[in-house]
Image (tube, rainbow, N blue to C red):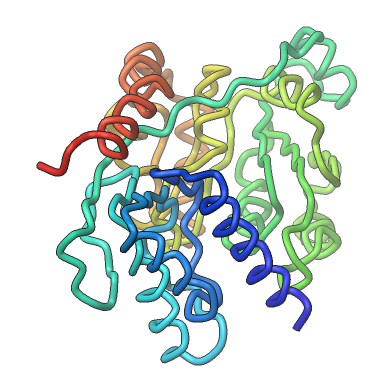
Amino acid sequence: MEWAGCICGNFRKLSQQIRTGNYNAVLLGAYSEYLAPLWSGQFRALAHSGVVFGAVVHDPVRDYVVGPRWWHRRSIAAAYSFLREAFVHEEIKLDTVRDLPCLRTTVIPHGPYRFPDAGQSREEVRRQWQIPEGASVALSFGHIRDGKNLDLILEALPACPSLYLVVAGKEQSPGQKPIGHYQELARKFGVQDRCRWIHGHIPEPEVGSLFVGADLTMLTYSRDFRSASGVLNASVAYHKPCVASSGGGNLRSVLEHYGLGWFVEPDNLPALKSGLEAALREPLKPRWEAYESENSWERNAQLVKEKMFGPIS
């Protein structure tokens, strides 16, 4: 398969670059187990020669299975096999399949995302969206995929007649429901007039306007989501509270610890309705400054540097 050859080819080029550049430490920005039995051997050889490998494990629970489960488990084991350092956003015992006594796990913060200034006022953005005076706006931002429960948001909208929904992003993959599916659901639930669809890739200079124009963000992940949320960290940068759901993990813990929004039971329509009604009714005082100071990229980099280049304790 073409994509398999592409993945293996990219890892082959990386291993060659490590050798020719005489690098002694390599940090992978994201852990990926796909086809690891085919490409991990070259990295194990580099690790045995003294190269320190680390990886940021954004999704520590690897329950998205591609192919037979035995291959999935073998791939996970192979992808962890050459790592000395694993960086996660929430305390967790990693399922490495095989015992790896030399692998260390370190919790690092996920810093807020910064985008260019909006260049438009809140009023200007909302006029473009044709939002009436006195209405509230919820923003669903990022890839459009099944696990974000956009169908439940649309079904909950009739219970909140003053709430408008802006959906901004592109479809993630052919295997996910397309945006047309959700537009049809909006018509079915009679909320199409309160939905705004910004379909496609959102350039960075336009991201700010989305958050400036919104009152809250929707992070209603399914219970299978147990990771940190990039959208939450964009929302924090604009001081926008959120209505969120997920399985256990970083999203829930930081939201509740810093009071960043309303957490509701995942995959549950009545709970989501209650959360939206609370968001429209109850004042909230999130600890934005505390979150930003305690979850900075500077702290992230400091911890990574200490583990990647410091002695093994």
